[in-house]
Length: 136
Image (cartoon, rainbow, N blue to C red; front, side, top):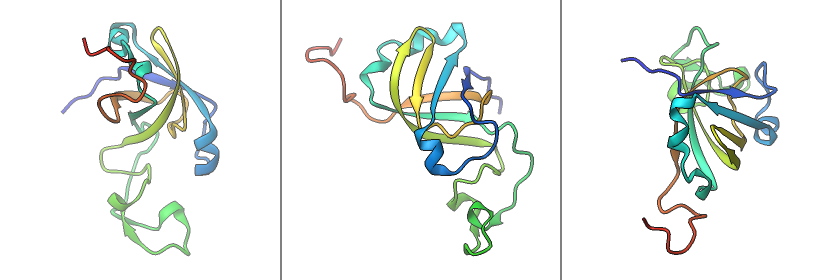
């Protein structure tokens, strides 16, 4: 199995931050030029799911304490949002702020600056912001 990045994250997140601060962070997703056409009419969507590679995560454990907090009960990694995962794939639902060319401004992306983007998916169809009569 092989994945190629379709773009990269640009933001101020250089290390792990608390979830509340991440939710307020605005990030730019810059797609590689050959994928720009795939953003056609993306602004019709209010939210997107962004899949990215957790490229700085090197190891994992199958049972962990969420957020590394010893007061949390142990649980399996698949029941958490831990970045330390067997395949290093992250996914976040973001709010789309703006689309300009091959760039998206989004809010709430919990990927670090420079993280490779694997895919972008709409949350639902039809999109929330699709203009009347645009079913072509």
